[in-house]
Image 1: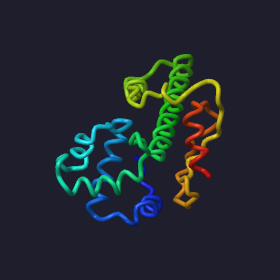
Image 2 (image 1 turned 30 degrees about the horizontal axis):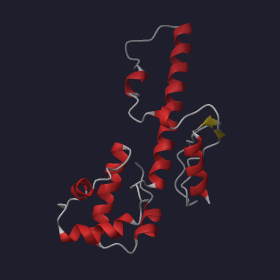
Image 3 (image 1 turned 180 degrees about the vertical axis):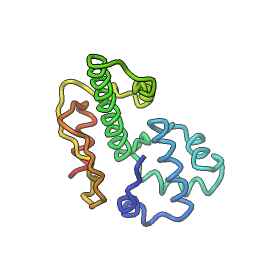
Image 4 (image 1 turned 90 degrees about the horizontal axis):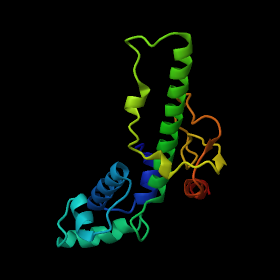
Length: 172
């Protein structure tokens, strides 16, 4: 998960150090598991507290402002969709490359099977559909300049209408 420091600080400047720590633990858990549990005791444990810890009650109210009522985080959903899209594009490119190589010459022993690294961990089917097209840019959502790496997400690709709506909303 990329961390856009300027965006993070702009959104969390008023958090205490303890609240920053809890928030970071929650967003890291969100990224790894594609969401957070709704159970308050589990949320407290993820954030490093016990459910009956008085500090959790005050931290919870400050951190909860950055999530919706179901503990969904819009920005992370967008970034997950982007990661899924990038993974899908790499998978398609690898398959095309393997198909092309197979016609010209057999794979060498040093060649790797790109399919092995694309285990489907991100479950691209959750975000990809055939009905909606969108050209995706790798620029940060806030328009901040960052060093160019010469990479973009490439040509027009299909996204689910939910991912499209989240990405468009974030651009506004």
